[in-house]
Image 1 (cartoon, rainbow, N blue to C red):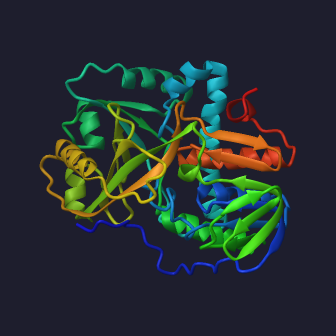
Image 2 (cartoon, helix red, strand yellow; image 1 turned 120 degrees about the vertical axis):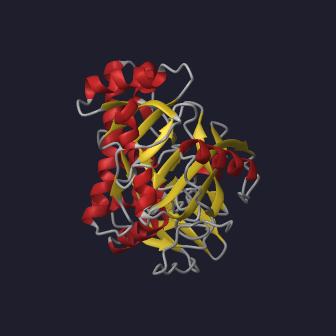
Image 3 (cartoon, rainbow, N blue to C red; image 1 turned 180 degrees about the horizontal axis):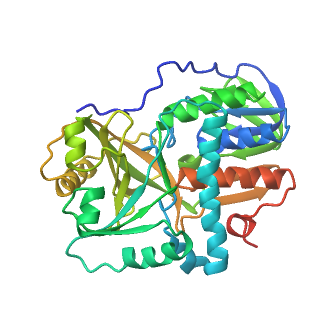
Length: 387
């Protein structure tokens, strides 16, 4: 087993570090999906004088180490959203999630980003033998809104995913997509660069003094700075969680057929939101687990072996007749808030964003921030900037 990130992007050439002073209207700190998306939306709105700095390389943080598992119910399911906001407001936020996934899909298509993107149905399963009304309640609520949602039971369930672990499950359409997250974010950064954004890698932010950002080899004078650094954010509202991902050897078509996953699907269970599975573009099983809280001073996300043990048990329960070997395993940190809604703060000439946890919500946050910066109306104002 290799203790390293599986995702690769062989043709990517990192940019050079900043080695001179420069001036910009908007400075973005952080080369993950939130930072690059903010740069993209600014460029689409005709803003020319934008710079982005990343302390390591683009995608070196949570985005590039993620599972590439984009799902509407990644953090908050529809029931939780309605409970939190009420039906009318909750459906606005739910639609925002749908829009976020569509935005990512449209960017990949329009900008011709090759990142193994696949729209996949999602399967949300209830553990067999446990009294669990969550999945049934979610199905009733979702079916009332999205007519193509299905409840899977018995043979119908086994036909979708051949596992003894689930008693019943929800199958949803247009709720999920799989991609190679490193290819996506790095090639997305090439898109924003072509649109005029200056991108510098290996350029950590040392300090901000009024309207000047200090880096090791050059200072940046800015009008607005947007700090999109997620897990490195010092805000007490954001806690850091460590998650672990494993990837198996390639499965044969016969093996995939035996578990009824020749058609790729994204799967997770109701017991733990961080227990998930997908089939990669090259037919490997990817499984993830973990929400271990870690201190923000722990800079290196060393592999968390207890997670691997739990993932292995989960895999055995899912597919007891399969014996795939684990070829890759790694752990990574990401930021999350208590209520799973990102923190976005506008303070003077700085904007801070973090804790979005879901990459779909990261894109939603980025678009909202750009709308605010350009004094445009945002449909998500009441969620991201409650008064």
